Image (cartoon, rainbow, N blue to C red; front, side, top):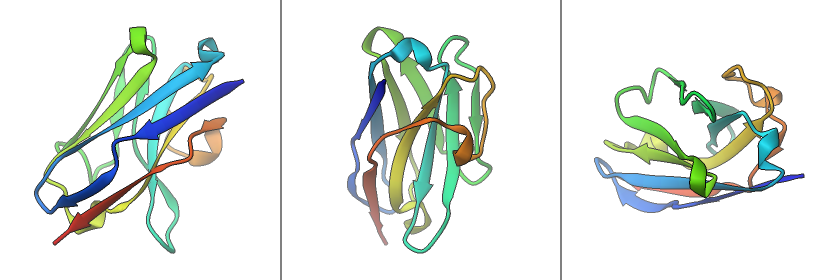
Length: 124
């Protein structure tokens, strides 16, 4: 089994930055792709970014491109989501997700493993 634990959420002013972390444990060899998704109250869980564990290939949703970066530290089994120029529209619960697929995918139904989420609040 795989466990994913997110951290780093909190309250930030608009224009500010946050770094989220996702630590994987357990059968981490089962994970080849890690994605970040977010869900605001009353809305769908949307794709934010993803990274290939092996090749570091990345993908970003259009509304975060240029503001967010995703990276991984294999030695620490950790994926980071660096968020900058935050706006109130970025406020949501952010979830880390992992899957065995080598393909980077944008649909939450295509990820097998999920963390519990970390909340990001952006004040205007």
